[in-house]
Amino acid sequence: NLTEHDKIEKVKNTVKFISRTGLFHQGTSLTNMPYDCLVGIQSANDFGYDTVRVNVRMTSDGVAVLSHDATINSVARNTDGTAISGDIDIATHTLAELNQYDYGIRYGAQYAGMKITELSDAMALCKKLGMNVILEIKPDTLTAEEFDSILGDVVDSSMIEYKHSSFFLYS
Image (cartoon, rainbow, N blue to C red; front, side):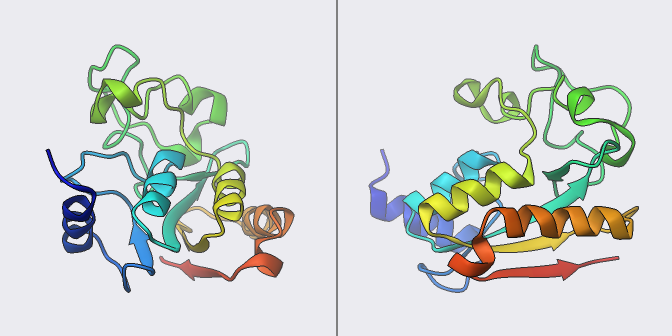
């Protein structure tokens, strides 16, 4: 069994970070932990990080969710744990459609039943934990209205007043 110190050292060596009290990006293959989710944010806090970087995409019904990839296939599974057949693109599916899949079971039974994380929930948790947030906004099909919606989630969370949030747009 790994000590808490050993776990922190493994995380420091496998994720992008600024310092231990710095940036925690996604999850880590060594801990087999889901990323771009509330569990990952809580784990970053538990490991002593004060900043997380998450990836943001928009669903077809205008909900900002956390996902690095344009499709859910690399992180989600059918509810029975089997691989999803065919690409499931976030931008062309509603939140309800995306939540028919399991986002945790791929990482172990302890994470089974997880749904895709909404940005508003992630921002609320970061505020509760006192963590900084860096949003990497994926603009593949992003409209001006959708970008305004993402900013609205940040403003609604009061994170701009509480801590700094950074935004990155990648094409």
